[in-house]
Image (cartoon, rainbow, N blue to C red):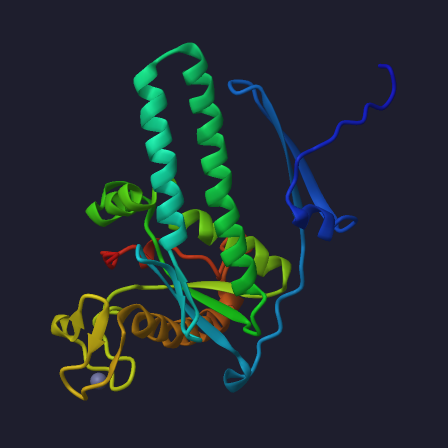
Length: 269
Ligand SMILES: [Zn+2]
């Protein structure tokens, strides 16, 4: 009634990237949480299909001791994360013990700072990874239900606190999208048991952090071996999806994991 009103909106960088190309927009009002969302839609041309030998795929293994190991031999270990988390835990315990109102305030502040610290770590890892000269980034599919219930995931939470592999995954996805690259998900089955050199699969190939093949004797850091298997799986999955994407409906995203990938998931160790 009083003319146009202008409000600032918190948004992802993608919104700016595609400004002017929106084909549809929808206002969603969440009365319960007293929030308003704007959903915008853009139509993008299909990505050009590259020749198989030209596509560069990077495999990424996620875990506890190493947050991420890339198949190009890059390791992101969790040492710093664990140390800082330990410091926060100590401070939080002391504040909880005192129980005063000011302690409660400080506690809240501390949790916020801890969350931001973890988020920064995930931003750094995803940024550094996506900027590498690869077209496709292959990760193991993580099932949300598995993440909640699995013992190994509880172990992650205990060891690494609020760090979560799914936040890293989200950051990877939007940074890759922004760079015109692709994140792809593979079935993690056997990625930690399979020899990345000869393909032999056995539980006995793995000795803690060392992988030693019972068949060909190949020896490598276990997480690095897994990331190389993920790379190979990622490449074939990428081409499988590229060849079937023509028959997918518009609302089926060919490049994200579906239920079919949610079989028993590999344990983190
Ligand atoms: Zn082997």
